[in-house]
Image (cartoon, rainbow, N blue to C red; front, side, top):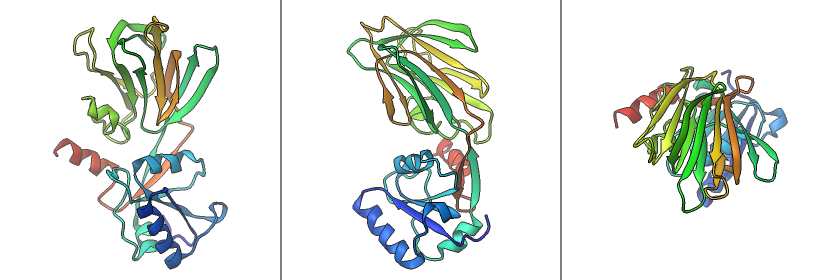
Amino acid sequence: MNRPNHIHFTASGSETAQAALDELVALYGQSPVGRADVIVALGGDGFMLQTLHSGAGLPVYGMNRGSVGFMMNDYVPENLPARLAAAEEAVINPLAMTAQTADGVVHAALAINEVSLLRVGPQAAKLRISVNGRVRMEELVCDGAIVATPAGSTAYNYSVHGPILPIGSDVLALTGIASFRPRRWQGAILPSSAVVRFDVLEPEKRPVMADADSRAVKPVLWVEVRSEPKVQHRILFDPGHGLEERLMREQFA
């Protein structure tokens, strides 16, 4: 991007992030979001997702003041405008989740990383899975299931042994969580144009919640997930340390 003249800084509530906010504002000033060229987010991956979901539409450059920081750059306060000017941009599309709860209300949310369905009681969940209107699995007995974007494939999806997807690939990962029947079913790789529907079987006996980037809806009767190409999130990384390189490193760690 061009060298930014106006930077808006935002930070999580942790002491470390707040101290970094004070330091950077003292060095570079603080522009309101409406006049900013770029947002610098200080915190961890969760705060990065929160910043992207805020809907400002500006490129976001994260600096790690949290724990894992997969979506963040290293915290270096010096020469920040030059780093921003040299940064590489990754554009990602979120998932759109639509879910109906037991009270008949239909909920909608966007997820940058993944949409997950999780059992909320002692009984395993039973899910029927359809893709593009066609039933592909009559019954999955499991602790839950995940639909993940390439950007989110190294998060919860990877921790339950789902595949890592290359950034820029037009695919989604559908991954089972502790699948019991079919035994050890791990999931499928689907085109990004796919519409995935989950119908909850025996919802009163086996209640299920849906979660879109930590925004939970429960108990759900059905959930539909699709990619939303009309929404774009712009993330900035230091040269040579973008999402593609990070995903590659994860696979050889």
